[in-house]
Image (cartoon, rainbow, N blue to C red; front, side):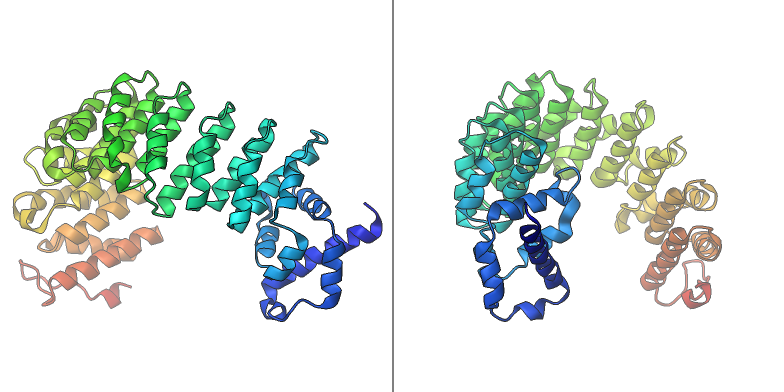
Length: 444
């Protein structure tokens, strides 16, 4: 590239960057001089310069430039041909396979994807038909960035691509579109459900993950997810199947029964995911899992499983003859993450159960607030006492002390907030024992 042409490119990029700082200056029509420069500029040159601005060819490393290009006036973007078929042709060209060419292809696919217009979708869909696997990968990535319903059809086609990476981009893209655009697209749901039977473990896993976040229309996939859990040999596929059931099987007795079975899986990843997923199941269906969850909380060797069991118990039934004592016992678990989750779970005891179950939690929670070596456990204990300790002078005293003296700011703030909640619940300022909490202003 000669010096004059390089300076022209740098100048245009500078114009784009300045737009972020002074957008008003570009509300006016593009000047004739700028138009002449833009018309003379070859799109390939601009894309090559874009590629050189990142050391590893990654789109993510140069967001200021990407934002600037997206903010260019439409007229200038058209003159630069940033998002038209000519630029797509650059991406699909096969004149060499150097690293620079790969970076150019990625940037072109990214530029087309960020445009989110019909022409870009058509261009990227055309590139999906290329015989060059790298081009197909980049095109699938570009459609991922487009993220609109028009890109779903070509992405469904890409699910059959012979290349693993291209298929993975396609399945992730479909899941992203359904989740964030809240689109009900039956062909997409059917394609993802069919992908649960793909020979590739990664495809089955990613399809289950995508369905989990596809919303209510994907509930039709619950039977297929149950079958996937029962038959797949990969623990990571079974984990995603269980994850999907937690999102989609809220009202399904079959899903609840499958999750109960999954609590006994040989894989800790699956047991953990099953416990977490039970939080998304209707309480009436999840109650049968309580004894198993208590057993996991007490005896599972994996910290993550015990933590998720505490989390599930807090959602299903924090107040119970067996549940509450198990959660209190978990306040002494060797893992601070389990202790913190147990404290948070106890905060879910409902008001009508406070007298029967809540009072027993106060002394161990105060002990955690005063003496636990983890600031997160102390913070969760303060949070729980704010919900449960309204009738306890000892709880008020412990929270007052923590709000003033705990060495960690987050704990002090949580304790102060707990006192605010207790005072709000008891506006007279009197506890059931006749003690008046110290004013929050004085504590702070």
